[in-house]
Structure formats: C-alpha cells, structure tokens
Image (cartoon, rainbow, N blue to C red; front, side):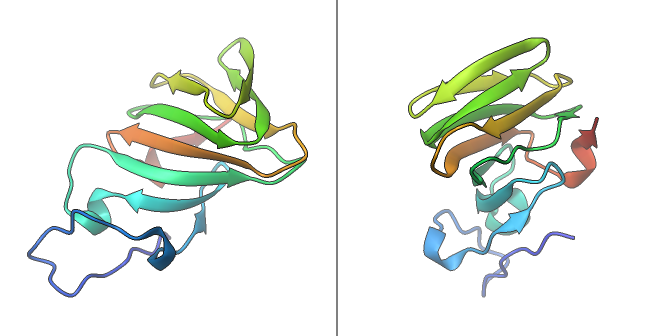
Amino acid sequence: MEERVQYPCPDEPVMKTARCQLQSFITRDGSEIIELFHPGSNGNAMQSLAEARVACGCATRLHRHHQSEELYHILSGTGRMTLGREVLNVRRGDTVCILPGVAHCLENTGKDELVFLCCCAPPYTHQDTELL
C-alpha cells in the first residue's frame, strides 16, 4: 500500500512540493519512485508526476496501464525501452510517450543510475498497472 504525505490543512490544496521532504516507494513494476505531485497528496486532479530510478543492471517489469498515458523524460543515465514491439535506446534528454494499453519496460544499460520523470494522466495507481 502506498504511503501518502499528510499535510496539516487537508481542505486547502498544496500546489508546491519539496522533493527533500518526500519519501520514495517501489511501484508494481519494480522502479523506485518519489511522487512529486499526485491527487492523493496534493489537491491536483488530472495527472501525477514522479521521479523514478532504475539501478545499474536492473530493469522494470514488463507491464501496461489500461487508463493512464505516460510520458518518461530521461534526466540521467542510459537505457533500453521496450515499447510494444519496438525497442528504443534512451538517454538524457529523451522523452517517450507510452499510450494506454501498450506493454513497456525500461532497462538500465549504463554505468550509472537511470533517473527519469514520469508523468501519468490520469494519475498513477497500482490498480491500473497490469504486470505481464
């Protein structure tokens, strides 16, 4: 079960977060993420934004989301993205769009941690993640 940050005034949406105050957790696909913004914590409604990490030599599990469209923006590192039947090499500065229903996973092929932003609309939920 995901833990969400509790803010002192739940009636007022929090429209700013500080990464240093947020805790990471492991998603169903095996990546470590920090939710930078999510409706369950922040008062926004239509999307979520997370920073995700994949360690050297590791990969996320092949999965798909039935509702969410995702954007991955690579901040650092290099990897190989399986996107449906395609395999794409990704590196810092690349952005990949993952449409709902498309099977995908991300492998770290570099010597450093692979770090990326993941934007989901509608917002990420474990329930919308089907492991394949």
